Length: 518
Image 1 (cartoon, rainbow, N blue to C red):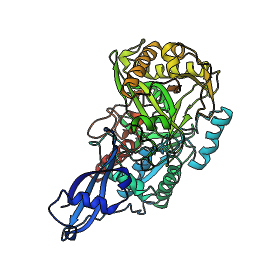
Image 2: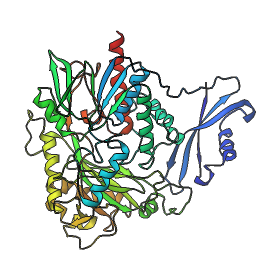
Image 3: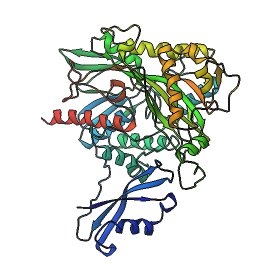
Image 4: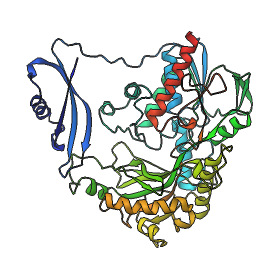
């Protein structure tokens, strides 16, 4: 069995193996001569004290002990195997497909959007011409929302599945092994497309299929069993097992399920704004003035505050990042953030969002599964109107927002379509605006310098999670009433990021494989 040793080192010593080992052997009763292998298992920054350090978990194997040998992902031919349908080629869908191949089934993945390369033209059209393609955008297409809107791989979901396996598959398809070590692993939007492409090519090489511009437009079930799906309003395909991994923005799927009598329900979600600071300022705050240290990465932050019974918190914080236009329809504005692998842009951005339950909403009806979705849509529409019905965003400097002053100018922004100066207090619902105002003041007390008029709010940050849940059995993971239908990941309300979605895709496919073998 390996030995785990916790040490703390200064940032400049991170690459100094002799120094690291010297610190390790201060804590153990054996010598280097007794060790056959060692590595850093976990690495994290500790900036709680004035002197910033790295916390390392070092793993050592003594001579004579068996060292683990990781098995990389292996492709096998499933071209003649039983088929399983997967709707959506985001992380949940791709990982479900990879697990299907591993288990001997042939995955058929239907993706409404385009492949990663073709998506780029549609993203450029949003940024430059304010033209939204409802089927190809930051949310729809190969790799899902994460491909072009960041690639942070950390998750708090330690009990939902094999986090390490999900991370290792990313490495197998091209990610740096550092993601297995860092406490907050990150790939970067510039590197994710090639990794996603490699996954798709492996699926196809094994005999599976990934079909682009193939949208599920209808679904057939009889006697509480899924029977078939319709693609592009034309072709019907018969399946007894369908994984529904369509993501948090596929509103048409929610409407379709409801129309076909498949139970869905409103769920809590979060909505607010995306705030942008200069990264240099966040570094100064978080690193206690040691912001020029070349051994420290761009700093991140995590903030939370309870305001009038609702949580207000930072979401999807992007050091050295960019704010992106993530609308999926023509009459809405949506923001999100992403970072390249080096996180070397001069801006820091984060969602600052308010937790909202269906019961909190003014038109709450316990029998209406769309009450949260409708609220989300209203906010996005109102912001679109406030920005002149373009993909510009309504914006305001932070202190101006708290004091109700319309900003007369803005610092340079990473949001390419541009900003429109408004009073966000008159655009956002008061239940959101009042809590955001109080939270920003409180955040300024927790992070000295954070509350500044040099920071700009971009509205809205509204796609934090699905406002609708597709309920499923906790054991079989099938829909509570429809056998063979597996609501999966973010779009079904059971995940909150790339890794948790990937794990949920694996878990759903595991249940199908178990059912097929019984």
